[in-house]
Length: 450
Image (tube, rainbow, N blue to C red):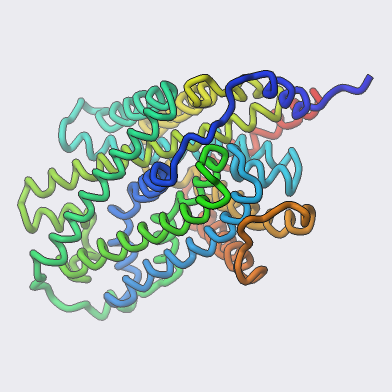
């Protein structure tokens, strides 16, 4: 008698289970989710690094425009994939259809153990750093705050999708309003009386390095794919979501960098370690610096919640398809993947503990996630070509314009960032790759059970 595959067995279990992803996320909720996820820590830390690699105000602003354009190119590719194949697994589902179960399994394992949980821990550490500026909780204050953020926000998402999305909506609104205040302060209240740009600063022009940090700040818009099974009228709203979110994020990034340049000047901006805090401190003194700490804490809390919300969806899809992780493939009656959220939270807490021991939580987590993220992001771009060839009959409500040029540009961008993340990162990158490789025995065991 032929033994059924994991996908067949779990597919039948899912069919008997009343609880499944429902269309419960409106376009406005999804927009708050993606904007809140992307505008996390990058825009408060990377502008000074970008400016130090470029030689003029115009070049700095142009770099952020290019970041928006590159993100838009990727979003056009994802627009076709997400509307043709709406699924809670997002990238996992595309890789499954394009390359088969082995590649999809490794991606889902990498996302659960490295990419998404590493991102949650990364942003939670920054929340801990800035929350500690407001109220310190001892020697391990940042780690305590990071762990509390993971626990509280995971619990809110387990309670129900409504609680998760409303938490995200309010955090995103507070974040955008705070950023608008920083923009107004920098653009209207301060005129820098600083020396002109030095020849040394211009000699350091490095567009490649600058774009690495720009694109890091834009990272996260692709998470829209993981809510495609829950988005109202996905065939119409997915492309709107991607276009609007990237448009809003690009506009905010341009305005905030204009405010930094106008309020501090390029020279002071390149020398700043906390450019937003310096801008507000110059205007309002220490109360201004405390305000920016509160704003960044809110921003990182919103990004942590968004990462938790979308990350568990891939774990749920993994559990639906592979018996070894079948306990993850359950959707509870509160319209959330409860078990997937619990496992994701536990791994994120373990990474917070790891970062606490290294004493370099943020840097360690960025190094840990970057190469693995860009490798599978590249494969997702390639899957567009494969699926067009393998499944030409599949209805595509949205088709990538200027095919194949647009997806080729997207793949080249991903390839460049993969190379950069391997060359310019520390030991954390090797550790992340090793964790992915550790998934191979699990893949072998899963295949053996078929």
